[in-house]
Image (cartoon, rainbow, N blue to C red):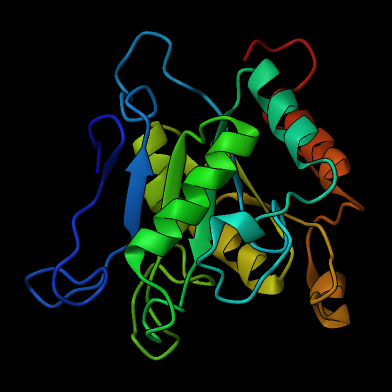
Length: 219
């Protein structure tokens, strides 16, 4: 799954479908993120959900101009980078399967977020619908596992931060640690069931760093 700088995993005639009829996510990674064998290979990563976590949720948004960061998003990402932790995004985008979005629109929105936050190390996007039976759509673990492979990080050394139960379930299924940041669409039962809950992104990143970089251990 290692990709050259700025590249995207190719899709066939059906979004995210391989020639053999299987379904896979779209991956876009920076060159440095894709080199797991480099001497300074990353040892830890935080993977964010996109809509409702890093940016305000605009249903099926294909307009970069409609992107608005959630309060604290820029500071949260900056704190992770300062600590030497890799940053990724794992995002369900079923609007593609529903015919409401194109790949180009999804990429344009993601690149706008790169502009606002600095380039994200890896984007892992599921373009499939709930009935497609893919293994990448959260709550399945595929997006988390794909992002970890690109970053050269074991899932147990990754934290997934999201705003709904499927984000947490995907983390658990992949062997990563989940942190729920409840938002407007979070259900009470999702909050009650979450292994770890944070009031905001700043608190979520503190939890992540405390787990990934215990005191006295180098990054």
